[in-house]
Image 1 (cartoon, rainbow, N blue to C red):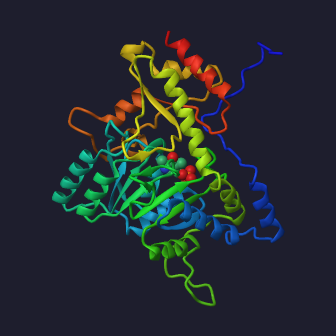
Image 2 (image 1 turned 180 degrees about the vertical axis):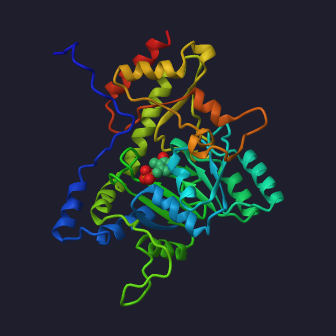
Image 3 (image 1 turned 30 degrees about the vertical axis):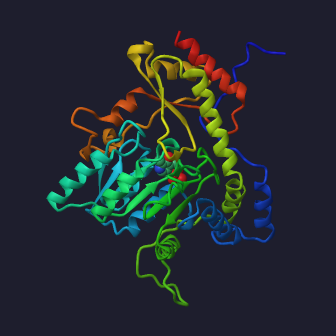
Length: 385
Ligand SMILES: *Cc1c(COP(=O)(O)O)cnc(C)c1O
């Protein structure tokens, strides 16, 4: 029997989706008393992620943010250095630049992928070279699972001999020309935060192209302990290792990653089938020769056509207990980064700002029931009429 007075159940943007196998690994950790940030689950989880992505050396850490911090340290970023970073992203992409006292320079998106514009990146490189202030690293984000134009970006990075860090926090399971996202740059990072495609409740992974960098990362992540019988330290270290219990959750989660990607892609396809005929709506495309994990279904709304603003649509959905969201607010517009240099896609167009004003992310959890998705679709249809 339906109760029409009950508050409609909340539909989350992206909630944790357990496989049912997690408890077994946690129990094993308890039984063997491996409760520390060392233990068999950590090594196994690293090996399993390496096997899945097919290239690079993996280091399990406490968060995606920690992984970015380590990647910057291993790229030699020091106080006063410049780091180029995508502007249209979550603040965690750039916070570690500030941890190091370095200066972020923000690079706009291009319209096809919503990710770093190679054109803007080239301009930034050219001007930095003229000033004699080339960056020490470039952080390129794969937004909502969509790969950036990595061929163009890595070519530019190689030309200027600057290491590329792929912020693949949102794109585990995405591929670019057959290669896993996170394995193309010198470094890649993944996040296993609660809302990501797989989760360890909190956690992250650093992927290093050069295995010796992975060894260095392990050293830095465990308080930079020198190889001596007594406690001896010659450099600054961090407490960034993942716990053996959380790595156990990760092992269960990585075993179902392909199912999770399929589910998110199915959710995207349903939204697309049901809503793409509405004029004024444009779904984030998928770059040819790539596979997006479709972590979140994202689209833009042309207010001139729909006569409905993004703000209004979001308010309406939130009232219906549906957790939809704005696209990330570009970092060059954040008070935290006031005064930072910014390179737009071209003189007339700041693509990240356009996407911020017109973009919206829809609930996309792999555990979202189809009737919930239909409720969202019906809501959007009714408001557009
Ligand atoms: C989630 C996320 C991070 C940070 O990962 P944490 O594990 O939460 O520290 C970094 N970059 C992007 C683009 C993210 O979405």
